[in-house]
Length: 169
Image 1 (cartoon, helix red, strand yellow):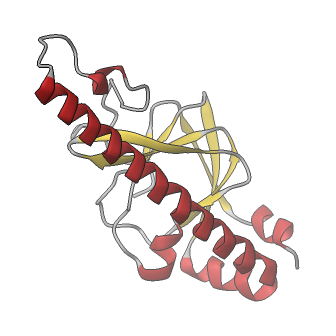
Image 2 (cartoon, helix red, strand yellow):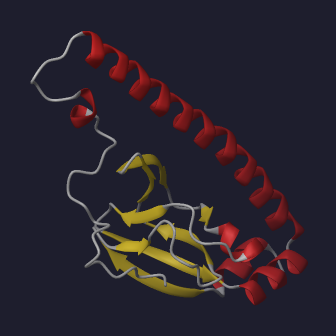
């Protein structure tokens, strides 16, 4: 059986715009996901701000760290499209897919490595910009808004408030 056949057998969930699939730091339920439809954004808390790292588009796997070592969620995931259709991959399904479709493991490992490089670069760039802004602010103090307030990647409405219940947990 190939990867497409394995994906077709997954349990599905549908979630709506603005819903949080899971929050950074919460214990995982041991599941990863495959996005069939919609768009999700990944946010990481950096210096008490939720910063968008990247988007997840149809055809992508995510949440694999929950399968591999059952670690707490490394980032928060929010639905940004009107809705999203996700397949749930638990540990049993993961092992079965790995045995039936060796290309699954290769594609997943390749994607994880690409994401590590991409995320590391983005976090370094964000911290470098914050350091530069801090130096400039010390040199030229002004009462106007800080540059981080104009940064598009920072969430203005907080979908991560304590009142929000993650969908995927």
